[in-house]
Image (cartoon, each protein chain N blue to C red):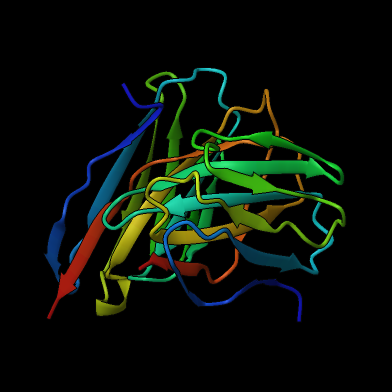
Amino acid sequence: DGGITQSPKYLFRKEGQNVTLSCEQNLNHDAMYWYRQDPGQGLRLIYYSQIVNDFQKGDIAEGYSVSREKKESFPLTVTSAQKNPTAFYLCASSSGGDYNEQFFGPGTRLTVL
Amino acid sequence: RKEVEQDPGPFNVPEGATVAFNCTYSNSASQSFFWYRQDCRKEPKLLMSVYSSGNEDGRFTAQLNRASQYISLLIRDSKLSDSATYLCVVNAGTNAGKSTFGDGTTLTVKP
């Protein structure tokens, strides 16, 4: 089945630790995205990538880093520089272009202890 | 002013009611528009794209008004299972990589 997978579903981290969230897609999509969602709020764009080996900062990139070495994979690292990392993290992909319907993975809930 | 604005609600309606949501956007160059549905603690799922001529999918109708820069979603004959948060999404088209999401409108359908 084609889709987007994220792992782990739940993640607990101690303050001061870096942690990497996985996102994989087998939809052959060129574009991939990372969003953060806080309780009762909308989605905020962290980073996005339109093509392999290239990515751009979104609205809230500080304290996060990404890589795009393969078309299928777009991991997100939450660094210790992120002041308030507890949130719901959503990965999405799209075929790109102007129409750009995005399809989401199931998300990772990160809690900093 | 936010690029995409939605009435957060909540909208509380009885089963069988008709309910409409509006979403306004500020970028007149916006090219494509979508409605997503998000259930509690789940990922957003694409509900429908919004075409210039308006489009319908069963009980759901989406419309676009470019002159006034808003899109709407109409749900007829509401079901309990329609309870969710509905997100409006706008693509500027000038940068194909970026979409702007509204904060969502929460709908609760009651028996």
